[in-house]
Image 1 (cartoon, rainbow, N blue to C red):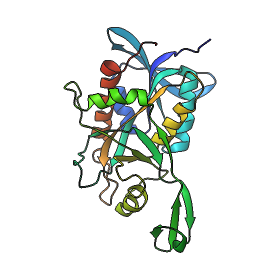
Image 2: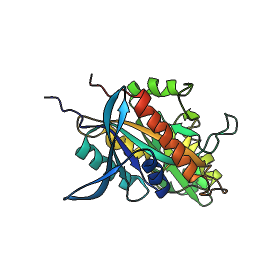
Image 3: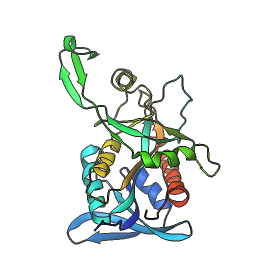
Length: 260
């Protein structure tokens, strides 16, 4: 017998600013389980005239390990149809493409781990940082292709409240505030990368490799800085809000909640 989804949408956040933005959009009620220390927030929303279920979990710390663990737990406990990670990211679009602004939304079609690789002597690597060389062994995960046409249509939709970029999202284990790292380690592998964060790869990996019924993973991150020496926290609250606003537009107006 084919397993069925139990929840329509699950949201994941990490930072305090992201959590506050998520809480703004629904009348949440906290839910806990005796064998689980995680606090889940549950609510309802309307899609196509029908009341639907949504759950949110705040990841305990930044990074791929905590993100993967929490994502898997949410998938197993709630069996969501869609697993959407909202929040903030660094905009990394090159200067010769349309300029990214604070609050612009990045929706990746592919997420990749730029930090996977091997440190070697500089004479054995094309990527060199002083006396240290790096051999990249990047891995990637695709957003399921069946959802991408819907996401691409939202870019020009009059109902869409946000400015949206669709392109690769680079994911790594540390905060980046160096243009040199972007040029050498990110652009050299995926030159059209649109954003950089610390959790997206793990969330998509968890969804794509979970047991059935697998959720469709969607990453919705908004630009709060540009991963350079001018990095600051000034626009984190604004970016977190636009991310959640676009995600809400998706699950209320765009995504199908019906079984095939």
